[in-house]
Amino acid sequence: MMNTASDDRSAPKVGFIGLGAMGAPMARHLHARGLLTAVATRTQDKADAFAAGLGVRAARSADNFADCDVVALCVPLDFDVLENVTALAAVLKRGAIVIDHSTVAVDTARRAAAMLAVHDIGFLDAPVSGGVEGARNGKLSVMVGGNADVLERARPVLDSYAARISHMGATGAGQATKAINQVLVAGINEAVCEGLALGEKLGLDAERLLPTLMAGAAGNWFLDKRGATMLRDEFAPGFKCGHMLKDLRIVQGMARDAGIRSHTIDQAAADYAELVERGHGESDTSALITLKRG
Image 1 (cartoon, rainbow, N blue to C red):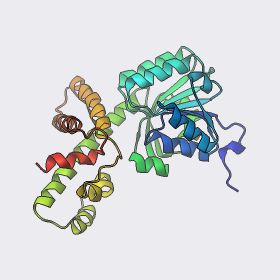
Image 2: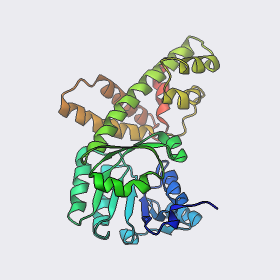
Image 3: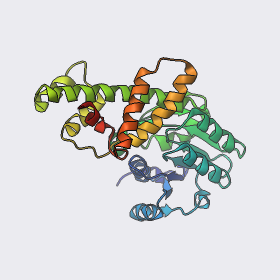
Image 4: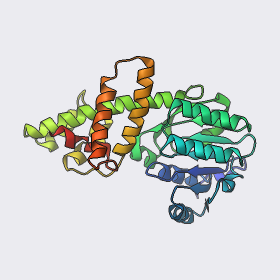
């Protein structure tokens, strides 16, 4: 018989808001640990079906999270984060914790933390990296900003779906780290898609090319997970082009404020804006190869 966290009376009761490609598997990992109490997402029917499948509560308002010790968010936009935090601040008990796994601006994280602090509710900005595969396998990298004591109390939740939990500093440091992550991801995407488009034009055999590249210094996660599919014009997300564009626009603002050269960021933002304009907003970021082919 599987021993779950529900056997421990001190285990936190956890709510999860946002059941998209990343959020749904993260919530399932919480359920597997016996921690999940309530779920919500933008579409009520989706939340109802998800909750029924796991035997947990489908929330219809913030009030349905009032008994939770921890509520995790994984939502698309800064507005969504602040809207949920405003509602949760009014109902959660003192000492509860809100963990935000969304990718938003540093200032949004700081605003959310301040709103909750008035009610003695903890907050962690904890964006994740690892893609849908990492979420499904419970192997995400979680980059956390906030109070170290709050993080320690939240670890049983994060451990459910994390391969690595890194405390990066005070509130906002998690989002700052995710911004750097997205610069590297965007740059790698640019290089991989451009390189593979060139490989196609030169007539190279993909079945030989991909493992050869992966065996050397060019090997990387994106090439490994998306190389074969993009060459077959399969762009099921994954991570959506529209979401990458949103993230890159956040990063562009940070880069301007920091005064760095941002050629990679700007080129990637322009490319993903073009992909969205072409109707690829819901496609995986590997659809970038369609631009690189000329």
